[in-house]
Image (tube, rainbow, N blue to C red; front, side, top):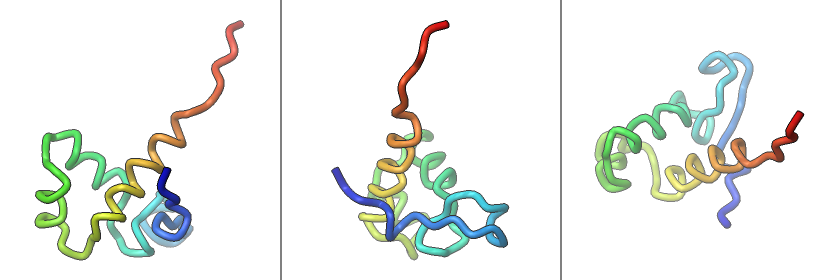
Length: 74
């Protein structure tokens, strides 16, 4: 699985402290929104030309890892 640690950054003064791509003002959520609206990786790269393919993969991996947690039944 791809590592995203060098590609996804969180800075308190940038984008409200939300995760961004490589310190740019492109939020992980922005990339995910484009993907969930049906854009392909290639189309996202055309829409956001400062991104690299590995940035998109890092966004997906970051989101996946944030959602992967144990659920404890109560």
